[in-house]
Amino acid sequence: MTSIRVGLAQFHPIMGNFAANLAKIADLTQQAKAEGCDLICLGELSVSGYPPQDLLFNSHFVDDSIRATLEIASLANEITIVVGGVSRGEDKNQLHNSAYAFSDGRLQQISHKSKLPNYEVFDEKRYFTPGPACVIEVAGHQVGLAVCEDIWEDATVCRSLKEQGAELIAVVNASPYNIDKMSERSAVLDARVSELGIGLAYVNIVGGQDGLIFDGSSHARGPGFNLVADVAQFSEGLAVWDWLSDSSKSATSNPSQLSQSEAIFAASVSGLRDYVQDNGFSKVGVALSGGIDSALTTYIAAKALGPENVHTVTLPSKFSSDHSISDSIELCNNLGCTITELNIASVHSELQDTLTRSVGEELKSITDENLQSRIRGLSMMALSNQQGWLILATGNKTEAAVGYSTLYGDTVGAYGVIRDLWKTQVYELANWINQTFDEKIPEHIITKPPSAELRPDQKDEDTLGDYDVVDSILKLYIEQRMTATEIANRGFDLDHTKRIVSLVDRAEYKRRQSSIGTRVSKMSFGVDRRVPITNSFDPL
Image (cartoon, rainbow, N blue to C red):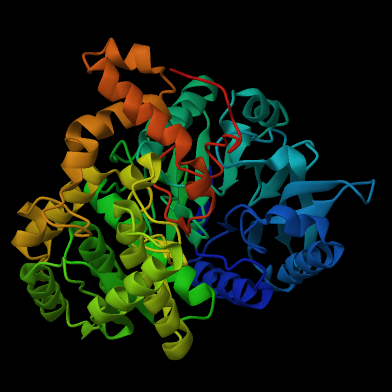
């Protein structure tokens, strides 16, 4: 029996840049033809980018997307191309999330997504109408077409395709990365293969779209061989699979998979690089405090954009320790980034005096602390205007959760590189970096007690408690949605737990005004967790 040579093509689509996306599709198609592929599969909505969100309410965007998708027909000579794109239903007001199939220089079939996800970051029922999936013929064989969620909920769609005669199912995907996604994905694909005894060609997009990160991990699996060909996580590329011929070959049970720290680092680099470049920037600015958060942000930025494009500024006040500056200088010397000192002590003193005279009394401690942070934020935004830098926010998920940040101060920035990393994860990633790369984060930055340095001898733990305990409480409250009492029953002090939970609920207004950033968890702040700001409910 003849086999089908399948090209699994993953690339980073740029939202709304149809010309650039078509150029990449054309290049990958030429590569697949050179490899003798009968079929090339590309990701979900890879012509337009995913997720288009309310751009889908713009008829011009939809028309341009469909027009660009149909241009792919001219590439489909001596090869069948399956690619994800938007299509209109019989009712022109209805849209489908579809897999287009082109061959012999023309459109052969459009298969529609049947299962529309409406959880976590997905909101597809707002935009799309479900439709039937279909089967196409490739090199004398029947190939079923499915779109992402069609294989996740249950085997209904895949079973329907098999009943239509499918011997192989090509699945086009836009499946975002999170820490647990690889194991979840493998379990789903294994279940479909086991239930149906059929091969799956799984193709995913790669790269960052705002805060979402797509990890690719395109691969083929099926009964008796599990995995034959795959494209590495977080990379563009093409893998070739000889379906049937490769079925008897031994293979690994999972696609090429990075360790958790490797994957978080790769996702962080990918997310920042794509956000900066896709939005027309080249250089970024970081306010370096000498602490672990800004150090890790700077490190990731240097890897994502090149150190020559990362400009750091240290903004000491009268409370800043000498080692905060020296540690920052050492980090930048290790990485090759520029560093500038902008001392805010005199500005802070003058503004203190002005405000004190205005209100007729000494400033409260919290007022004065936030004043320093906001002078720093103002300075960074002025440098952004002057130098054309995109400013990176340096806050972590723990700080965002409990509101340990100053609006219009240390929250300033267009993109938060580590905004979805708990403080304990920040330390874990920093230690992994120092074990992995030649360029190091100075050890003193990692080992010294974290401090905002806004008053004498200030330490984070004096305000929040031990970060290991705080993060454990926050994970249970935010990610597992436990009450304070349920958390305390896990062995945590009830009063401390109630205080941490209360801080989370009171800080929602801050999170709404903070930057977007790299999403690496299943429960990031923003779309994943939507809580009213005005809210008198007591969850304790």
